[in-house]
Length: 258
Length: 258
DNA sequence: AGAGAATTACTCAACTTGAGAACAACAAGG
DNA sequence: CCTTGTTGTTCTCAAGTTGAGTAATTCTCT
Image (cartoon, rainbow over the protein chains, first blue to last red):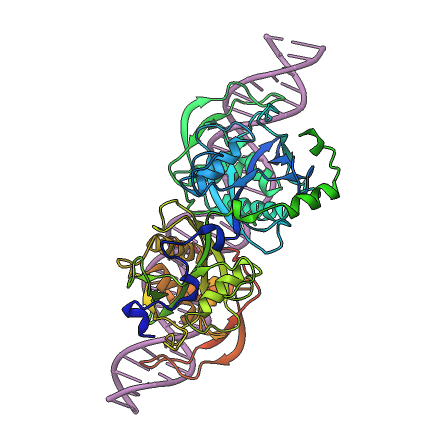
């Protein structure tokens, strides 16, 4: 109605947002970030999980997570943005290299997903090369890379978040150059194929994969170097490549195909 | 800390923990939902925007949005889940058909995105067929379908949210059957092509598009009926189809191609 | 009725894909 | 050092898909 234009204030949902607004009274929901960090070990996808040290659901596996620091407090300075919060809670579980691929997965906010209170959880995904096991030092609660089939004993709705993450990863491998995020700076085509086979869960035709990767502009760049050794049981030394400029693959690699 | 590992579950401890938990201590941020509702009018993508009736940024276009109702209050019952909140704030701006396509776009939480306080905003997308203009009745502030090129006068970071929505829509048309969500229950292949041309912003080869759609299993189903009339300036009456079962397209329609 | 237009079918060369064979370069064991 | 097995890479070819254009069909409009 026309009153809206001239500025008279009628929107119930926005009443309260005046300068005297007290967030604690009108914002009875907590915001957390949870991180699904994926890597590939021995040909199988693994996810970083931590044992819950506190109630509720103490002792169950859970995604690394924590409250978003909305403002400076005793706990530490405010998180400038949500990705900062995700990297912070991840670093609390295990050291991470400086350059990692981080992207938002989705936000989960069902009323009953946490028994304590309304918790809105922003889930992030991290794609990492194979990393050492997390230490279990003083400030680090027990955490480990576990195969992502381990879903029976996860806390809250983290099994569903994991499922969503798996499907997202499977899908993004098709039309983005994401697979290189699972590998060290230089890698062989066979290692790249290993990423696809691990995430998609099936074998690919080595020769056709090789042809297709090299035919996709910007996916990989030749380093004109060779791997130090051939395969485990003998074999030719493979050529080393690094990730190319392209973020999107044209044409894509299709999961339904060989 | 190590008590967590054995997985024992201390019921009494947990009960005491829950009752002593004060949500307000951990909730110094507000959670909102914003909805990017897209439709196609006269061959151009349009988005539902509302004039901001209040400061800050009064008078600017903004996405329909509002606070997530974390618990029952004077304003109304709690939103059971985030999609419920999105549908609620959308319905406050314009009536919507019962079946609409709703999906989460992403969550925006930069410290400075709202001048008042920390606001975490979960953005949703809605893909709708061409709908009448929003009424401007008592409970409805001024809202309108505007071409999505209208970005110069949007509030907060809504221009960025809109950009993300556009890119998401462009991308999802390639490998999902999303385009049918912009159309009424039955439609012609030409109308479907119109969706692609509007969102991708370029003409497609009509004959090849026709061949490709019919060759993609599950995309459309033949109704064995014909459209009432031919094209505007004459032309054969087109066959009517309805959306098929498939959500994912194999093979996809590629944007780079004709 | 005739012109023009939208829909659908058809044609064909160029390209891509799936499957396998063949070739090249290495490790390990006699 | 020479053979054997293994891995990486290139090649071949039939089958399928795509891009571009042409043509047939059936409608509207004048």
